[in-house]
Length: 147
Image 1 (cartoon, rainbow, N blue to C red):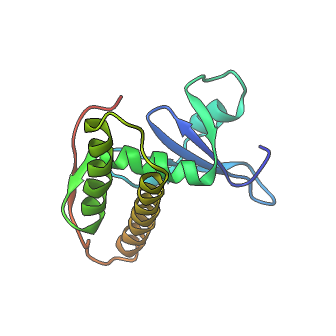
Image 2 (cartoon, helix red, strand yellow):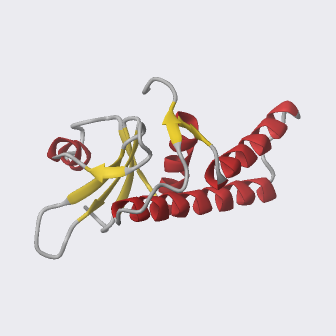
């Protein structure tokens, strides 16, 4: 691993790998059914680290990692509340550009990036609350088949 943490698109989600100062590489992999990051298996970590072992991954910048994660959550999860309102806002921007048969403007790309950064942080905060034993602040369901 060149950097720690390192970010990847991996199979049908994302994975973040870290190399602690004294120890083996550890990772967190997105579970697209729950929207949560869970410990990555040794097999998943090996597939990313061993060049050519698994061609279904690519390295990402941290910004792109957040965006891909949020694209996956937006695709596979449905619910109510601020996070899902922001996904609908991003979808509306994409749909408007598609209907007008044009590329996104720089302003639209920036707005979507801002929305996804906000939703990424909101998920982290929600899962931290839930881990601390607090009640969920919203409910959601998984919709669809994994790719």
